[in-house]
Length: 131
Image (cartoon, rainbow, N blue to C red; front, top):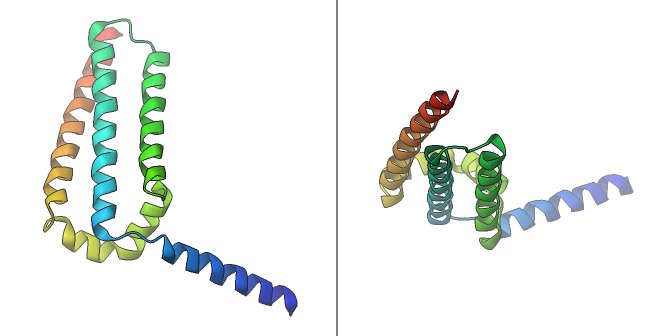
C-alpha cells in the first residue's frame, strides 16, 4: 500500500511540475519558428560548404551538430525541451492547428519550410554533382 502511495505522489508531483512549465501557444510558435530559422541557417551553411567544393561528410556532420546544439540551447533558454514542445503540441494539437493560420507565425513557418525544401533540393543536387 505504501509503495502505491509513493508512486501516486511522485506522479502527481511530476504532473504538477509539467503544468508549471507548460508553455502557451505564442511561446510554442515562437520556439518552432526560431528552431526552423536555425535549421535553415544550418542547411545554408551545408549548401555553402558544398558549393565551395571539398565539403566532406565530416564537415557536414560538424555543421549539423552545431545546428543541433543551437536548437537545444534555444529550448534550454526557454526552460523547456523539444520533447516538451512536442508533448505540448500533442496535448493541444487541435487548438494549435486552428491558430496556426491566424497568427503571423503560420505564414512565416510556411515560408521557412518552403525555403528549407528548396535548399534541401539544392544540397541533394550538389551532392549528386560531387559523385
